Length: 450
Ligand code: GLU
Image (cartoon, rainbow, N blue to C red; front, side):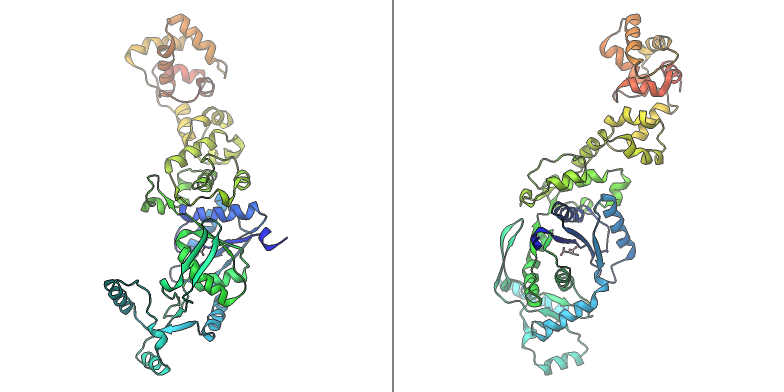
């Protein structure tokens, strides 16, 4: 098997915040691609920023990925690999393509403003390349610490992007990227390349906000090794209105969705399909999503993330979900009625927690709603209610109420539904009547709490 037949991909979140819909989509597409092609999915923790990275966020990322079903085959943290990054930096310095710079942030800012006024692109002017050893010593003796920039070739960098097709970045139109800050810490750019080389990553799959980065990173790959992965840059997520994700949606975390009783498979169904040529609908399992996945289906248009659609998909999934798959969670929610209740109400829930409302409706003590003019009618219906009821009792009972009262259609049916459930709509009444039992049903029809 060639390397291309067995992809090695990585999802590389920074543990500086919670996993949100945008980065879950990146994780999911990496995972689907790996699983579809018998490849390896690696979880890389990008924690070079030791100050902002926390163990709690890292644990949260792992918990959320596990909850979503996005299991990884290998994992490592960048904070364990500083020696490798230092070795790579030394090589680049020795080759003269990682060079020390001494400008402060303010000086760089002023420089950019000046360039803008002059109508020039705000590209670093490489002043530091003209410094002599003496100049550098002087600057350091004044207390300045060097930060280090990678010297781009100035030539166009071209690659065939798996999603975007032929891409070219003119490296003379971007600044030499800073790889090491003045305090000695690494920015993401170099460690990521070193890791992708060492982990033999075959495909870098990430958001299109990294396209320019890729131009610079490809030159770093070439400076360090013969290994160059393929790149797949995914269009970014936008909101339902086609505009950028709102702040709230952009930071919508898996924890929040879990707390709202959104099913992980609903999230994966939606995030796996938006921006592709497949229809957006609930998929019955991750295996089906894997089966259907192909980069050829991923378009270049932004992917719309619509919360309404998420709810719709969530409901559709639950309508088909067997009791065994939700039993534990229903128990945790204190939903009474067991399998019979679930089967009776599942086609009417949008979220699992809605089953709790139905359980309270059926077994709680709230009296139903009876309009003044329906009082006598409901009392008569109560008298006709058999002593014991089962799933099949509703039809014959309704017929007897119809015969005795002369009512039909909505005028017959609706007051009974309202009296029994307090609502104008809901699941089929037969199973609901069987669940609430004859005594409770009679009490409600008589306008009593029961
Ligand atoms: N930690 C980087 C980010 O979240 C990873 C980008 C990449 O996949 O290379 O932006």
